[in-house]
Length: 470
Image (cartoon, rainbow, N blue to C red; front, side, top):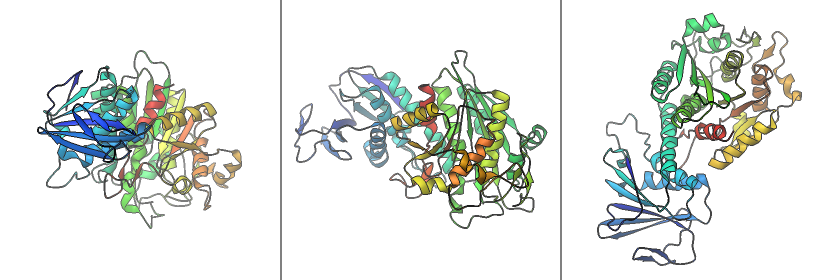
């Protein structure tokens, strides 16, 4: 896609996109008049007028749409009205549009090009992705920065869509490490990969225990974006279970969707692309422990006691509580060796968080109220919402073990997301600015853009927006 910026146009061609805020009057554009009985800008409505071989697409925004609403509206137009997009389109920006409105709209248009048919013989390619396609931005104001940013946000989210939606025989730990190396070379961050032998030498015992039942080589991925004008140092950890059978505590339902259990890793990888693409003035060190939780004669067992990078021993109560085990080593390694000022981990960690919030928001855990407030504000601003749950020490008994320092599962049918967070907290070395995001209900699910469950890229923009506003 090529983007051009124009301030006037007397000879429209192809498609003209005209967003309209809800009004009580008739809609006017050039010499086109639309009766309010037919169209008045109501949210989620549109109206098409064909004139002189030009399609004028009027898009209803409602009265005061937020960022997510605008992004979804334009993604819907791009995805479901793709036949209108031929070789060019003119996007007429309303005078009311702000930089954020433009960013959201452009991002939505680009996201609308995504198609789940990765392995179909006949692939559907959206016209917007064609090199000859031209998108003209018609406005008296200069929105070039916002347009470019919207494209970069969408591109990072599209990468995360691919990583999470592609099957586990494609998205292996090695695939993720190769992706990180290639992205680092392209966008400007350093990548270091620990294979199984290196992980053994370093002492990443908890991480290795989860992956020991799989033939696929575990990969401990370390990425470091360190610009010369860095203001602060932020650490990220993303859960990278490329497929989760549950181990010997094998899952009895929903296993077909467990390719998504690396969505936390996908969010971190996408955020690293976006942060470095935007050249944000912050140092970001990100770790993705990537492995597969499989069933095999070599799989770790319930009742095993394993070690960890931190030196704490862990009693294994349930092998399906594996995500917290790899995050434990990721957090310990990050904090000990890189000492970031703030640490955020993100994971599809517990069904308990889904039971609490459904599919509306992610669960947030932190004892730092300022960090909690900033993360929630960042999420609210772009439609990736979080809500805080407690980390009270009264829940600490849920992870107490008689035989080891901690156990990986409480064994109780209640407060599962909280006890998982308490387990992770044990491995943060009492870091005063750490947050855990449990995104099991919002990283992969159903919406209008596909007939099956698919990736949302939740966390890519949230993390980036949080860092931008530090």
